Image (cartoon, rainbow, N blue to C red; front, side, top):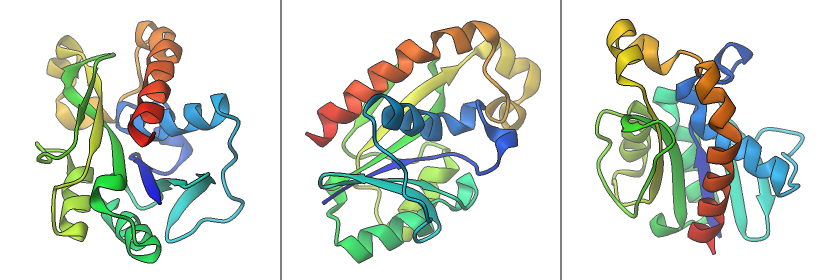
Length: 173
């Protein structure tokens, strides 16, 4: 069994914000792969399943995502290397992706929460770049991660999300 986790914040006000790139990636993946989300949440997460892979969007806020991840991992007895966490990263240029089989949170509070709940950082993660230094300097980090994508960035999202969908398939294969 595998677990793919998209990080984000619940609520419509967070749609298309940088911090919800993980949710956006999974929603796009489900659309293009024609998978449907389950009708009822489980363990505090929106979830769906395709074959031996479970996909979740934790519905606690970003900084508390670890609880749902831990519950799925424990219930389904998922090995750490069979987890994939998808999150935003403002230190990566917009549109770039970085996959690591293990690593540190590097300031990402969603990863910090997962690491605290799992008591390890030895799980794979796919970071999706949201970096826009000019905008980030004007807003500050907190407002930046909660800001919407610019119109120019939004126009590029379908291509980036398709690349992310292909990368998810590659990783879980």
